[in-house]
Image (tube, rainbow, N blue to C red; front, side, top):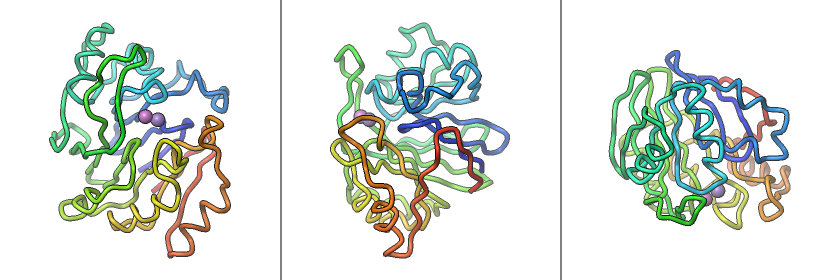
Length: 226
Ligand code: NI
Ligand code: MN
């Protein structure tokens, strides 16, 4: 699977010949000003929750690509009101098989509202299972015991966790989350974008390496094969 980082919590995974984009927030991110948003053409867009820093570019990218948008019921209703027609509603715990593999929504301990303040349902994470491998994107969340349920059903190849603290887990809690879900490789997200979440990269990586795990911090625009 090829993973490309677009800054903050936005990344693309290419698996089974399909492109899955998560939490598109690119054009308002000054660190991602070199990314050409109008050239991003995913097949699916998965949205973890309604906060602006996870869906700012959702409608534009969905319209230019006709990608299927996947999110909780309230995201489905909101996206449909924005004029999107290719939207699939799910909710926490639900599983659905698509043409690339299966998605299950996990609980996330966070909040969720749309940019206008209206209710956006519960925040979620995603477990994605494909014949090329499986991964878990937690979305914005605290460290939570629920994560221990994931490896009871799915053997993961890697995980993507927020590490910026203040609004979510920091690297220390993310390394415990990696233990909970039985992965050794974690891609860090949700750091450095704003002053509240600036982190020391070397310290964050050491937190993982001291317990035999790897924290991968991609450059914005960089791709990696996992
Ligand atoms: Ni959030
Ligand atoms: Mn966020």
